[in-house]
Amino acid sequence: MMIDTREPIIVEFPMRGEWLSPNTPGSRIPSHGTNKFGSRYAYDFIQVDWERKGWPAYRVSLSQYLLFGVPLHEYYCWGQEVYAPCDGVIVQAEDGYEERARTNLLSDMSNAYKNARYFDPKKDDVQSVAGNYIIMKCGDNVYAALVHLQVGSIKVSVGQRIKKGELVGRVGHSGNSFAPHLHFQLMDSSDINTANGLPSAFEQYEVFRDGEWKKQFNCIPSNKDRIRFHS
Image (cartoon, rainbow, N blue to C red; front, side, top):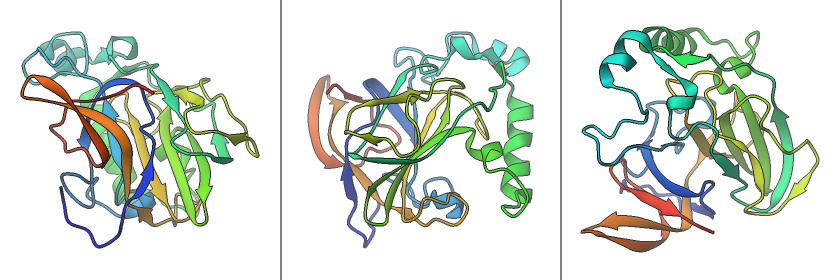
């Protein structure tokens, strides 16, 4: 785990079942290589086949992924349920941003490069980066963002009060996304364009180590941890 001077804010893990976090503040900070868009301490979560070499996130072969791309339904995590990480109020809920029907390595990399280099918050729509997303206020100057959700899946609306663990949407591939995944972060503002990231940790989950599941409390997973959570 990286050492950081700020105490992480404790939240509930936002999915159920087994997950891997390929980008996590447990392995590097900033976790996504940038402090932009409040993402300094952000997590990405995917599901993988732990028995296959390289832990692929999709059911097809590597050659099909590289040559032809992969339809979204062939990804293990696409459509998985996403839950509120805290009690709070929904302050933004943006849906209707269409997902690309399949992943394509070259076009997705080009899209990511363009957004990283040329996105202008004054004139560009933040949905081109975030896709379908939810922002909820968890406390004073603490906002949770759940990003890249499946189109048409958002179950909440602005102003709605929700409890920790309530269903809010589904994992998707909208916006600046290489493959279906959940991007999760805490921020000090509800404006993704200007917010600073806040460190977070998960109040409880399990890690598979030495052939058994071991409970973790108030921890931050690394990018190698096989993690699971059931409420």
